[in-house]
Image 1: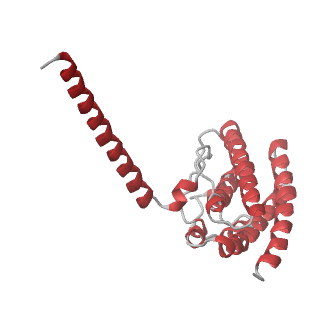
Image 2: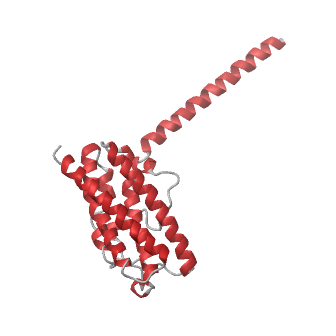
Image 3: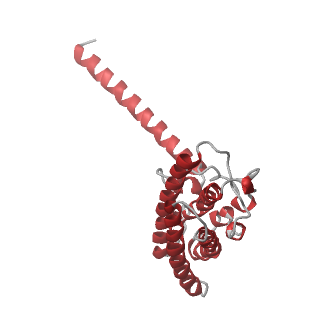
Length: 221
């Protein structure tokens, strides 16, 4: 066999291998796309994880002995969980919502509450070290804010139906955070925590008013 013939043979063999590999890669991608749950692809890669992000937030229970822990530790651990519920719901908005204004609100919720979670975890480490969890579901506003959160119901909806249900769940959730934050403002706490509570009251009250306006309009559709 001549050198040219050997070259042509090896070239054809190489092209055949590349074609087979490409077809296999495409098949793997199609299989992954068909089997992945929509909610999974919604989660941003920079999400700050919470200890309870995959749990049913409406059925959570208090940590053992939480009520006896320092108030600030209770607030931090409980608010981290509360924020986790909002983030879980807001992550569904990008691929389900009909209204652009709700998409933008969800981005704000995710960014703001991820940042606040990161701050609270840092304060927790500085002030309380490795103290055991102190999630207290009896803190003012916590149960009222979490009881209507149902990510599985949101997961099944699209467009305007999703938008209306998201708002129905998120308004009382925000109201619960505001109640908890207002209670913190009546106590002797670190300036950092007081500043966080003031920001929660201000920002989430503003978001509640916007959601109520959208709710009145979108429920008529």
